[in-house]
Amino acid sequence: MVQKKNVRTRYAPSPTGFFHIGGARTALLNYLFAKHYNGDFIVRMEDTDVERNVINGISSQLDGLSWLGITPDESPNNEGKYGPYIQTKKLLRYKELAYKLLDEKKAYLCFCTAEELEHAREEAIKNSLTPKYNRKCANLSKKIIEENINKNIPFVIRLKIDDDATIAWDDMVRGKMIIPTSALTDPVILKSSGIPTYNFAVVVDDFDMKISHVLRGEEHLSNTPYQIAIKNALGFENDIEYGHLSIIVDETGKKLSKRNKELKQFISDYIELGFLPEAIVNFLSLLGWSPNTNSEIFSLNELIKIFDYSRISKAPAFFDIKKMMWISNEYFKKMVDKEYLIFTKKYIDIDLRDRILLSKNESIYDNLLLIFKNQISHASELNNLIKDLIFNNFSIDFIDNFIVEIGKDIFYKNMISLKNELNKYDEINFENASKIIDDVKKNTNLKGKELYMPIRMIAICKEHSPELNKVLTFIGKDKIISNIKNIEEKIFKK
Image 1 (tube, rainbow, N blue to C red):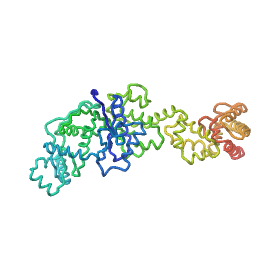
Image 2 (cartoon, rainbow, N blue to C red):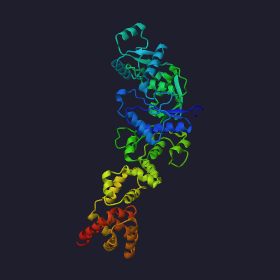
Image 3 (tube, helix red, strand yellow):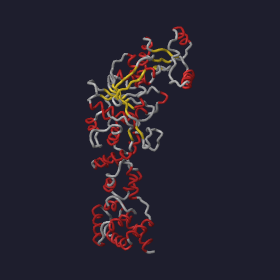
Image 4 (spheres, rainbow, N blue to C red):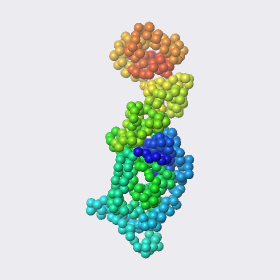
């Protein structure tokens, strides 16, 4: 149960990579939680892993959030009174607190080398023990410490963990969690470089920024007892409530991996493909959370209103691509035509656009895009749909096989009538295209499949298509007449 206090949640990514779908899900749920309780949503950058940080890592996160419509109340771009919101800008703060723990005998200097630590780890494994620091440096004399410092021997600062205690918290997702401190090791809180470790910096930041609730991935479950131990040692009395979200799995049931190149996993991928941000937000909200309703289509404001953290599932969340496509398609269907055209035109290949407009007007181009409005899940999909419709490869063999199926006399009667009607007009438009089809129907007394399918085959060499009058307009009189001539010469004059 959420405590009666000012709700402040946070999304704290590391810029060692770009804005991932898993991070976006975490950010969204924290945002929905905060806004449901009229609280604040904070974004900060945990950039202390300097060597692994990528160029544009921070901007990828902030720009991706902006695209999704998730607006932080405080962030590196909109700093509040609890900053800085980038960890490397507050290194002195971490260092002061680490040395405070050292002075209070709650932490100690460790001079062990990487080789020594690895050897101790191997010995523990060999003896079927849980690998943990053997506390070789926990009780060094003041004299030895001073000698090591004078010799410039590198050191880290480790927190001293009480062996005979337990760390417990009521997880918002998983319920009561109890960890014996005997299962923990003495964690490093400050590296020899003066850079804080992840767990130490997180505790300090959450305290400084008055964070009240933390929703994060289940991979952080092992970090939570260390963070609580550090918080207690520092004397921080902020009563943070933790909740650990389930992993996201792919269609094989395996944890979503960035190595899976078949699955689009970065928000930038969805931006480039032309997905609607509202649709991605809707889909992400349902990854491991379910509303108390049968509906699955929600605006961001609706999600804020109905969000209930108790409906977050402990079970793995399935990244259902088909469901994502369906949700996205529902959003395109609901778009106002004008907004749809403005959005989709940005994703049409320039060469394709020029080819379409070469002998046609903007109105025909607009209608060509609109004809697929109820079909697409992302805007770039239109490129192949248009190419497949109006720049298809005309196959005489395919036509020949169809004629055998539909009947030669029926096809021929239809084709000749279509040619005669087309020749009554200089060009085809939406109005006369409908009249052409109606007149072919009257002239031939054909209907249904026998009327429409031969016309489609002649125009685009396909048995199925969107609205036939529009298809004829897109293809144009010259192309259809050329197709008829081709069919007459190669099939009916054999």
